[in-house]
Length: 446
Length: 141
Image (cartoon, rainbow over all chains, first blue to last red; front, side, top):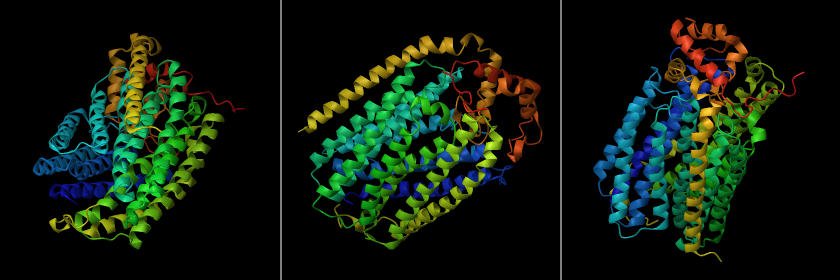
């Protein structure tokens, strides 16, 4: 690392690791419930486990993004973070909001709005937290020597993500209006501005790892984020097919969401092309695996599996079934889980000065977690397609179909065990690196 | 070959144009379509109270409504039509977990008034024009 203040990133990554571990625990609770073993019903009924599982996902990813931004911005702007103390306060408040929300979910303190379960009073704390974070990032950037495209795209993604949180805080009496604006947050985050964040982080990693000229990488970054917005903004329409708005959304949503994979394809081709073009071969093989991995798996998970059920004729039957869970798991993992893990793998040797560039544990973590997640996706897919045919096409009652597909959750749990083993190795490696220290300053410049 | 500044114009221009179209379409939907399709005149205080209870208990954490939510329990958009008022109220007012086919629902032990409100909400949802969702099972014999 080049700047002392970059060390704060480590603690955001540590929080990410902790929350990811907890997220997996709640995932298993749900998998067992689907198998017929809802043994924790009294303490953690399914809706609690579900809200905790998805909210932990969002918070560990955000914590990872924030950590990555705290690492990237000083290096790109050539300036120390303006206030490290404030960054630590922001970290603690993020952890506090997360913990209060999760504990609250066990005591019916929530709002039943998928992904936005955090009650509105706590939402205000989230707003203060994010404003503090953005304040630090923006002032650092403003006072810095340079404003690179990579840092601007990353910051733009973070600012838009904050702005788009607001429509989700408005109360509507009408469920259709509620749903309409809930997607402004959820869809425009994950299929819009989060891709800017992902693109910014990916560009930074490619510049460092491949050594390809910044101008070339940043030019293609603009093209990719352009494709993202052109397809993704109007692609919101694929959430509006069946919520009580007009038929125009069937056409608009169908066409533009079918174009969404192009942005991910662009991302994958971009990463591979830059890797092949790069003359400098960075020794951090594990970071390279995660970087190329995130570009490829996001194309499959978010791009292709999304395309598989985005057209209105298909979605009429798959909407609200386990097919969505299939797409959701590989999409979030490929696009956002893996980019955070890629960044942590890249930055840990630089933060700590220890160079475990090619360790067996690190490679095992990469392969086991990915194979496990692909297996989980297949299990969800088989269960989902069976559900669609039996329930939606043949008309067999929901409960009967769920009993028929229970067996697929055994396979899901087996694959999830593989995934968890991989994540276990990853966290073991993270802990092995130890704390960041000032001796690591300038020992490795990239 | 594309230059960096051209790529930047593509990004900014594409974003502004598509966002403007998106805002226009949204405005049209919210002001012209939603009131008619959702029968906004039927949004009584009881329906709104039902929605509040629905959210307060995170029903979407297990069920889907208009296809949105979780996949652990049945789709409820047309539940009023499918099961009727008495069945729904029995599930909501039960003091022990309602568990058809072994899968447990939280025992909400709602009062008659609360259960009536949720039923009113579900009845209202069932009448919203959802472009044909949920589809009728077309392979059903």
